[in-house]
Length: 160
Image 1 (cartoon, helix red, strand yellow):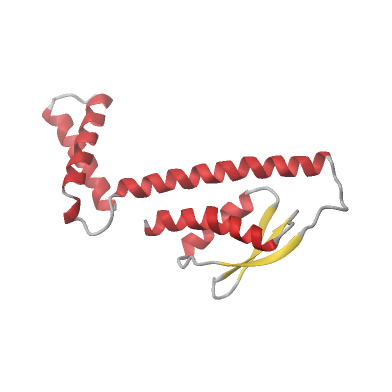
Image 2 (cartoon, helix red, strand yellow; image 1 turned 180 degrees about the vertical axis):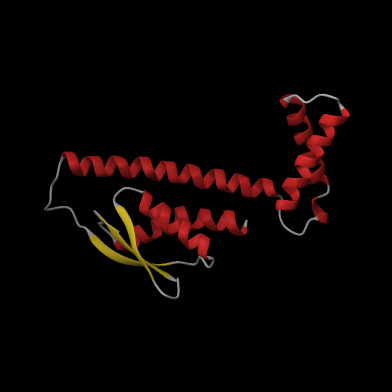
């Protein structure tokens, strides 16, 4: 992936020098030409095109922003109308399929940055995250929600 990005930038810079124009628009045209050249020669690269990983990272960011807004609203409603009889805070264990340290750290950070949830511990074998949530009706539903949003998006970015 890094090679593809560097190659694309190199083609864009060469395009700028060939046109004797150092403007941003010339760089963008050269970048798009380089991207087209990389797409046409993609069978010579071992991995997928880097553009798909970038797209997956954009999707992960959008998912995080959506979850951040929704959880802020739910925490705000809990603060405005505190009904302690219906609130169910709890700790639960969530098994994870992520393997690399940075993937687990990113997942833990995304969960902790979302209001109302915090990762309190990662097991020694790094296969289970222990999470505290401020209000959970169904543990399985909470685990499925995290797995189908954050974990799935992180796997798309890392294994893309």
